[in-house]
Every structure is written in structure tokens, then in C-alpha cells.
Image: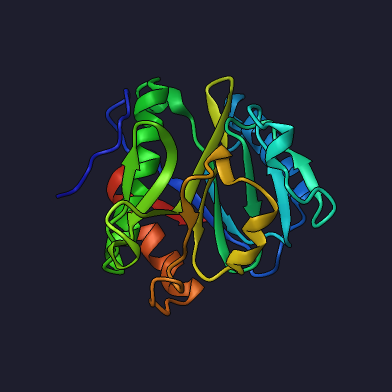
Length: 228
């Protein structure tokens, strides 16, 4: 069933949709997001979802604990300014930065984060994967009954920041990254569970196929998109 976006005006805003074919340096992405979010808040630019990959790196959210950075010299480490703890970004992981006006979508931050989680869960369902959320830990998780009745692995992360009610940062979905790269951190401060990907689950989806599923699921929940 179609999920209608929360929008006080009653009209569905058309969101720009951009895909970068080459890896984007993290500082460049941050600078772009901050400038775009400012322009959106001032009514000078439209909303945007930006899909990209980063070179291998770790980011530290505002709740990051130094002890959770296990290998500080392995990859560059950046202070992200978003919520959450340590995350890994790298090739084979689809990052989607969401620059959206939350005021136009109900001014409800909790509901907005829930919609981002649901967007990921809907995308995973396209590939036959059941994603779930947990009240005591962030992100989207999949059960691994092949490894034990209580085993769950994280397949997607969420971390956003709002400035003047415009979001930036966003989500990351593990398509086929090198999962060993996550060993340099305690991902999101959770050590009792592992990390997985579509490839690790035996699903050989291409990034183009994942992008197509992300866009379709986004439009069902947030409204129409257009090339930016």
C-alpha cells in the first residue's frame, strides 16, 4: 500500500535525486550537504537525496566513544557531526544523504527517522530480505537463524542531523562492502552483534539494482523524485 508522505501543505514536494558514479571524498560531501541544507532552509534550493560511495573511512558521531575506535590508524577518521557513534563507509556500500525539509513533513523528528528506517526495510524487501528495527539499538537488522536462534546482524545504518529543520547525513546500506573493514570499530557501539550485507546473505544485487529499489521505495513513502 502506498505510504503518503507527511506534508502539512497537502502537496507532495518533488525531491531531487542525484547519483554520483565515482567515490566522493568525505570532506567534499560534508561541505556540499551543509551548503545545500542552508539553501533549502532559505528557500533557494530544492530538497535532495544524494546517492554515493566513499573511499574507506570511519566516521564518529556525536556519541562516539574513543574505546570503540579499535584501529585508529587503519583508515581516515572524521568527526561527522551527526547523531550516533562510529560507522564505516567504503566501496560496495550505498550511502544516501537526505537533505529534506522536515517542517514540510510534519515537524516530527521521531516519525521522520521511523520513515527512514521503513524506507530501508521496504528496499530490502525488494530483494527478499526481512529487515527489522530494535528499540535498544539503531539501524536495520536481519535475523541469522543459520548461525543461531538469537543471532542478528546489522545491514544498514541511520544517522542524521537537523539544522533549521533541514536534515542532512542519512543512511547507508551494505550491498557488497568488505565486511572485514568493520573490524576497526565497534559499529554504532554494538559489540554483541555482527555486520552483514546483501552479498553476505547470498544476494548478488548490483548497485544499479539497489539504487532502483531505493528510489522506488523512497517515492512510495516520501513522494515523487526528479533527476537533479
